[in-house]
Length: 192
Ligand SMILES: Nc1ncnc2c1ncn2[C@@H]1O[C@H](COP(=O)(O)OP(=O)(O)OP(=O)(O)O)[C@@H](O)[C@H]1O
Ligand SMILES: [Mg+2]
Image (tube, rainbow, N blue to C red; front, top):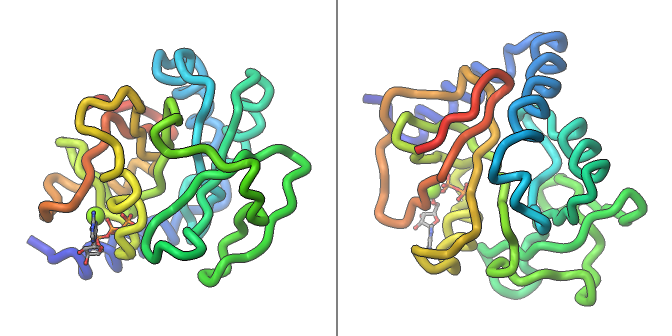
């Protein structure tokens, strides 16, 4: 079995090799999988992220969710609590600034923040996922730390977004890894 560092390299390479057409088809397929699903229909406050590094493109999903009247939030690196994310309201007019990884995030406005416990649904990025709902991220532990603030029985649903080629048979898991309730790709919604 490949170790976590090897898996990150292998799977990131895989998704970087997808054609522009494959990326576009996946982004449209993702909207088709998610808009009618029960978790989205039941949710009002939804966190998601802006795609980076050949991740499945969330642009069409964001537009569709706004159209459906959902309230959206983007993660921001916590300004003092290193390693944690906070979630800020995201509207078409929200000013974005690049964070220290070069990823655009909303300009911090404390009046627009929502505690993670008040989100109904969080779409997470991931590098790899397996058939048990385990996820492997980019290695910063940001989502693991942030999601560990939700009680085990919290109603907030966690759905990873990925390309089909990011699935592996079984991930090596560490005690701090936070599992997902589902993963959506361009072709499937897998619940665990
Ligand atoms: N709840 C936590 N408290 C303290 N440290 C944590 C917690 N969760 C993860 N970490 C630390 O974060 C580091 C990276 O974790 P890991 O390799 O699982 O990242 P990842 O899942 O790839 O990243 P991400 O969660 O941002 O997607 C590990 O060294 C781990 O010790
Ligand atoms: Mg992890």
